[in-house]
Amino acid sequence: MASDDILTRQIPHSPEAERAVLGSMLIDSRCAPGVIGLLKSSDFYSPLNRAIYDTIYSMFSYSKTIDPVTVLDNMKAGGVWTDNAPNYLLELMQLTPTSANVMEYVAIVRDVSLLRAIADTGSAITSLAVSGEGGAMSVLDAAEKKLYALRQGKSASGLEPVGKVLAGVYEQISEASAGGSGLPGLPSGLSDLDSRIMGLNNSDLIIIASRPGMGKTSIALNIALHAARASKKAVAFFSLEMSREQLALRLLSSESRIDGKKLQTGRVSPSEWKKLAEAASSISKADIYIDDNPSLSVADMNAQCRRVRDLGLVVIDYLQLMQSAAGPSRRTYENRVQVVSDISRMMKIMAKELNVPVICGCQLSRANEARSNKRPMLSDLRESGSIEQDADIVLGLYREDYYDKNTVNQNIAECIILKNRRGETGAVDLLWQPEFTTYSSLDRRHTDEDN
Image (cartoon, rainbow, N blue to C red; front, side, top):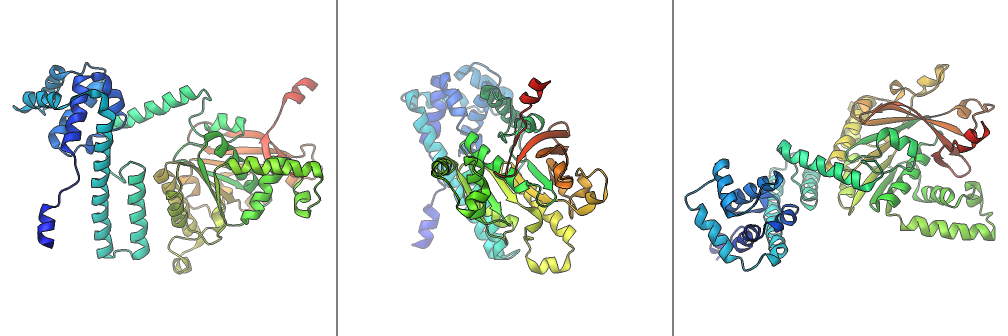
């Protein structure tokens, strides 16, 4: 019985739905934009159907007229012509009752295509588990990556024609143009900074570096909250130093504009309680998730992020507290520079795999303390290794009043762009409000009016 079941088992596919999709586009070329936006060539199980779809896809890309005659002509030019092609195209049109139901046919083709992909992935995972190469955790991580790639509707790896890549870039440009913000990425809430780094872009690794107490956690929280609100997407915040409650307290202080010391001591007036309630309600609407486990590795974070729906941003605070994916045994034999280099590389890989920006805090070494100009430099990154190599953007925070309590530039901060793959480097002035533990863009209007 079991052997009979194996012999009769078929790979999931729907010949009828595939034919109906192609027939609909041949009957009514106005169906093409909607279909091409949803189906890939690989969604078709039949090689002939795949060849016809590829032909129509190419014709649509070059704005050519789509009808049975032109499709046959382009099949000849593309080398996919068969003697049976004219009869088959005629059959497709005759078997399709109407093009009005084309989206239902598309849904069927997509569904069975996903079932085939799931079956292939299941077989691959089984092979990995049987081989046992790398151990159980390595196999589990590989399995999660494959399933995440399926859920995101993309293959885990492989070469892709430059034409398809250009089509995706063209779509990004169109979206940026339609949005009107002029930013290809998520807004950070700091307009002067956004104009330099083009916002927070997918697959970018962004390092925020400073000496302890300079406010890297605060600026990361500010950005996370603003990005969640502006994009309506989920933000994952991994805190390896501060607890969830401490982070929530900072968010409340920043949002309500109530001194953080008051919140910690409970000395809150009736009017401030109202502000707190409004702030809590507003923050709760943002789709932010916090994990304060102090012993997380990049692999742990990656696994959690794959399960978050509509993820838009990942924030990690901070790099030097992170564990090596290989665990304590490996750290015994390797120096810390190599471990941190491995971590930074894995974060960049995570940003590319999840296709979201990843922001990570990083501590600066004491090297700048010995200089007269204490502004951060790339070489000041602690245990730098490959951090500056892997990062797309490196931001250094500097406040003069951190070193000189009597300076006239009280609470004026510089966000120094030390590395920027998307544009120029330089410094952006920010306002630091210590009572609310928040950073904001520096308002220069009063200075202009005074002059």
